[in-house]
Length: 222
Ligand SMILES: [Mg+2]
View 1 (cartoon, rainbow, N blue to C red):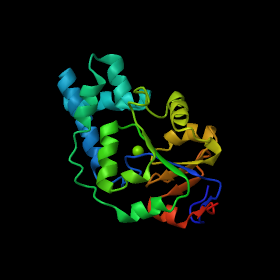
View 2: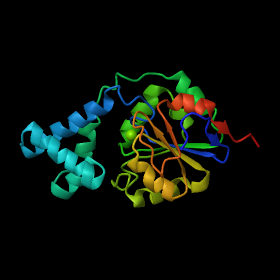
View 3: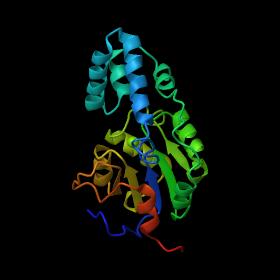
View 4: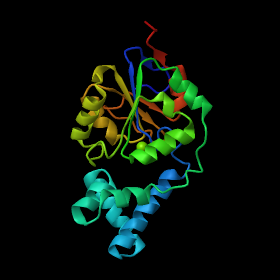
């Protein structure tokens, strides 16, 4: 694992990005708001007090990787109701990001999003950041048959949907556990954000995605 030296990504021509807390800073409050919306939804659904709802929510994340599969396993609600409710966020924290756009534009090859969020949420976030045009495709929770990362089957579906070669793919994520299966599949893995603990399945760690992309060694144009 390397922290300081420029990353050697000359073997990469597929660029795969998580969305939330990866393409915008983890501390901007969007995910805090989203977790609050999930807790509110559980309170409305179950009538339980807020602290119990939080415990239920944490349990679903632990057991299922996300709230949605836990919810569907235990309650009679439609995914649409849940996804629309929790993604109904103002997103006032993010705006056009020309530096990010330029860093993405520099990357040779194909670029994709691989998110546990809903399609509509991904579209809004990418639109607000002004980077939607940089991505060839978005693999979201609905395309994952409502099964989130880190479930291995979801990686298989994503790889098939995009037709990518794992060995030429670099995956950027703020969640270390979502990089485990990516590493097993042969992808190069980059942990983005403040979670600084290294692990054998992580090739690079960076607190600053744009700086990392701007300094990485890339494949020469053919
Ligand atoms: Mg994330």
